Image (cartoon, rainbow, N blue to C red; front, side, top):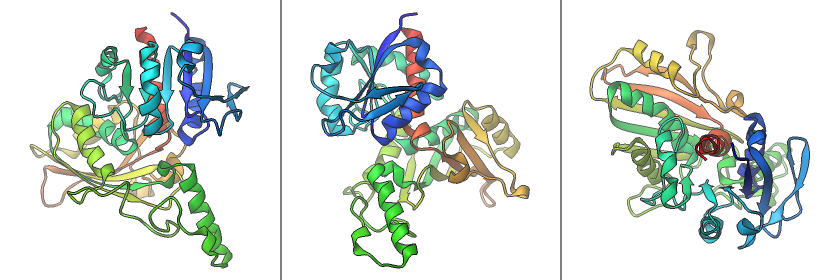
Length: 343
């Protein structure tokens, strides 16, 4: 099998740094000839650790993909960077796994969650691009897919409780500084919000991204549109996305209506067999998924599984996953792993 030259664009950012850690865990170094960490001019020269080796980040330029003979590039540097540099990569023949929203709803670009629609990976040949879905969408469809195959989903309602790391390193720092300020009792105005629209410490903000004319936010609409594209059919879905004062992991409360009534034991059976899904649901011992126990993990955790008391065709459950991993880096690396097998 051919060894590849791999580029990580946005190598010094929150997701890019996580990509290196996941690559180590997946032992993909045997398939990698060279790995190149690319960053902005401002971050060029910063050190990145990979398999005990210290790498220095390189400024991303238009000719970088040709210069370093890049076979595959994972982009995690924001939509504007992907918009500008992905065309240079694909023109060079580089296959791009893009973590931003820029290409997700492009009809010719496959939107892939390997546990859900791995067959779509080979569709990269049209554009040389594979899109990574939104972080909150990924963990949700990992659960929806096996349930849809069992019972056929009629409608989904989801409320998300999304960590500040989903808004980047600066948002995480903002939370820490605000909490520090609160508990120091100094009341220092310097630690008010700069990244998020309101103060996040000891607060919940029912807005992620900008509002649209339909009164939903862009984040909520992403979940609606991406879910239908990934599952291959229109899924009626309504989302309410909330930013919460948690450093890592997105949590979701899901209510799913099926075409027919169901036996709750069948739900457990299917979810326990689902790839990279862990059922953690023992209310007698107060065991259920929480960010504090799911952070740093590559699995999606499901608990509080219960049938609606008034409508036996409705299922309620609670889903938690590390947004920087399952929602970004791990999904990208799993795509990479399968892609390498096709080259």
